[in-house]
Image (cartoon, rainbow, N blue to C red; front, side, top):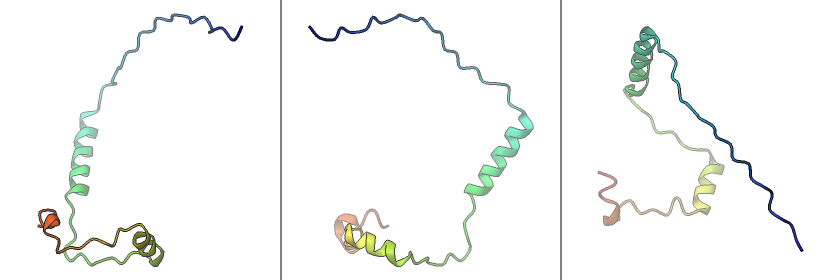
Length: 78
């Protein structure tokens, strides 16, 4: 014989997305804060050397086998 599929119940649900009112002062403060964070660039950025175990991981997975003088990659490095 075998298993019979269970009888499916049909439920009618109405899902509403309701957004609560937003405080204008908070929205302005948040916009300014996000702009300040994402607009920040350090003046003299120094190169950061990754840890040795990460370099080894990249070498094993072929992440360091990229030839930067490759003409196919020139448009990415402009």
